[in-house]
Image (cartoon, rainbow, N blue to C red; front, side):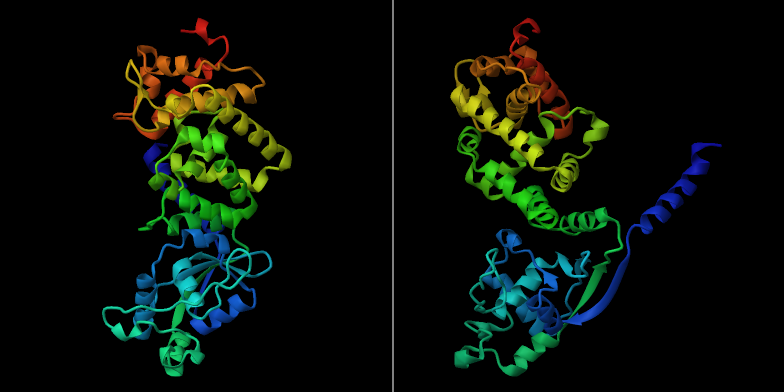
Length: 379
């Protein structure tokens, strides 16, 4: 039987199997009903997500304007947990805006955030300064306007608790990657918060380690986009990874998503402590033996330019690998950096015309050899 003759049947089988993994429901619900669910603790809007809540007052006010004008609202997606409560998967900014307007939105400490004060919009300039609280007198939305908002309805898409575990995470990843302004790491952080907020906080603690911050020396923009956390995660996942193949690595972003979720779900305290120890020791060694220079370009006379991923992959992950294997590593890191920029290191550092995945397949194994204490005999 030819490949062409069995492929349609195989596709149908895969479709059948995966459709059995995802169970959904859908119905309309008013904003007032959704608000009551949040107030009663039956709708989980992760407070940790607020750091990724990027809407400004004008965007929030335009959303309220749309509701008051009767413009239909896009669907929101929730996942049902084992206790039957709903966890918001997509629609954070819309739902948070509505809760903030009503003075109900809480921060990560359970404290109420200041109520939203609306600003002037294109079609409703008189929204300027309007608030929800009826005690605010002329500044308050009228009862009729409040009821218009409360009675507006969302189409709620529900991933039921009988769905496979992966379904919620895959739904979150896909919905929040379509046209989103969040970076891959910000999306990943939201994903991890939904899996285990403690794991996300642990990553942030590692990312705030002073030697790590000093030697990576990232510009403000990359720090705001949380590329520092992506570097932490790349190190944790890849420094001792044993199956570095292009097929396994796939798309780097998806690979990191899957590995991060797996770590958050399965790792116990001893595992995290072991990784933490390797991480701290690696970046302490780097700071004491070359610092941020070793992650920059060597032009034959001096180190120049910004932080480079390829140098991070060779040196940081090379050191981490030796420590994870219980071996000593090289600490003459400036000499190591010179070698990276010699002919011998050309393949490991080359980025032009190469994907991140293809580069990592060269840089990480190269670093494991180069950072061995006896590696001088290898080259």
